[in-house]
Length: 387
Image 1 (cartoon, rainbow, N blue to C red):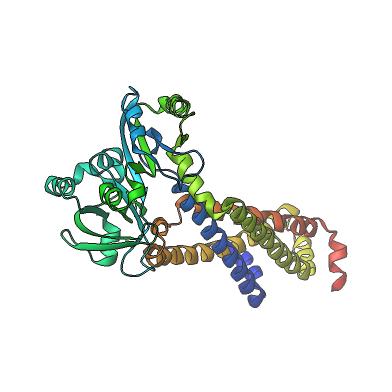
Image 2: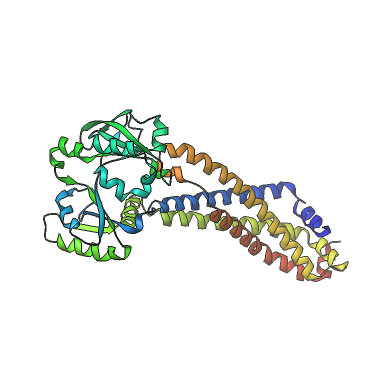
């Protein structure tokens, strides 16, 4: 305990400098925690519970092009295929352009089966499923989306799409609870409404999502499908669902490199700040350290005390930074999640928190060791000259 008291008194010898250093470390840890969590949240969008058994068949030239729905006839003949469903991005707006959320035209029955994990199919009331399948104007929405706009089963939702120059009025038949909040920020309705109202959409879909019986069959299936349609008017590109989602995320740019670059710059800043602070603090106490050695403190004890001081400084900074990041992440998930659907899943995971603590401690050790080692090995007579 006497050594802890000595470390604390040395650390707070200059309270203003210690406070500013801890604040700098806290801001750095805060930024790293948020950036790495943001990267983790965005990467999580490329995976889902059932994505290991699903792949997407799209137009080879661009995923924005439509393909013939008749392509499903070939898929139906493949023994490795369990189920498939068709989708088309609608891009509808609810009352105001600011009310953006994902909405698709789908085949109702097959959509529920192919995306049974995301829609939590086993828990859906049978009467709601029955009404959704029977009502040509029916739709299903996620719980988070329904709560955002105050929707209930039976409400009518008008959606206006500038892509198709079409407004549809949809009856809410199912409100489902997904495994993730981002899964609940979606609306799906019968694609026949779109195909019947838009002439060039008749018999065409945006993509086909296929569920394989065995994940090991997916590479062989993708190759076979693309080979079959290689000489057709619209060739296909079959890729895993994770790869498809990743391509969508890449529209944002190389966000991974950007986040890692910023994090690296912040780490360098932490190292410089901590090293400068500890070097100044140790240099100012040269005479004190020499006096302690003259009184019988060994070099190893001096080094340990100085290293403990650097570690304590790092722990204070990382603790404050983690507390700030956790609070901001919670608020961001509630506020930003209403605007950007995938932000509803934004959290700072325990792994990220542990990483921040370990990085800060490692940098604290690295920045403290060199000046502490020199001070503990400096000749006593040299340090006492200032007396």
